[in-house]
Length: 157
Image 1 (tube, one colour):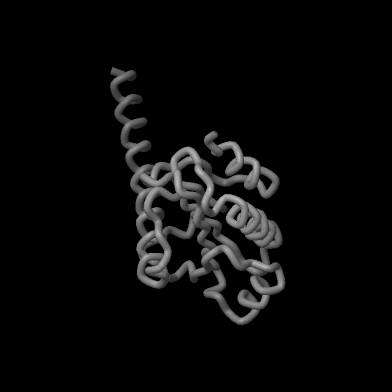
Image 2 (cartoon, one colour):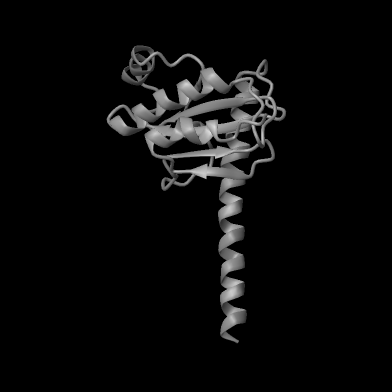
């Protein structure tokens, strides 16, 4: 009986996490398709970074994702044969200081949106997530020094 209960609890937890991940994936995909219809998302990895001007680590993650995006935007990757798209979700609603920060740090390849643009997102989102083209979670909460190498590990030859 205990095994049955534990199995059921694990199944419910897994389903809940998958639902949250797919909600984020679908939300950012919808925002990008609505505001940048020229961007082709078919068969691309989608990386999402949550950031704030006051959080230096999240800003460094922006730079690491920018480097990965500039390098692998059209590369053949496992889970995304047509490259990588990076979305930066700003917790400060892209105020003037946020825009200045993005420009100062040379963020050009990534697409930046307000976190508030996503409907029904919980406030306890991870620092970052990387999804394959099907919306399956590949990486979550990568440290700044792991971002580029994690994307690099997905190269197909």
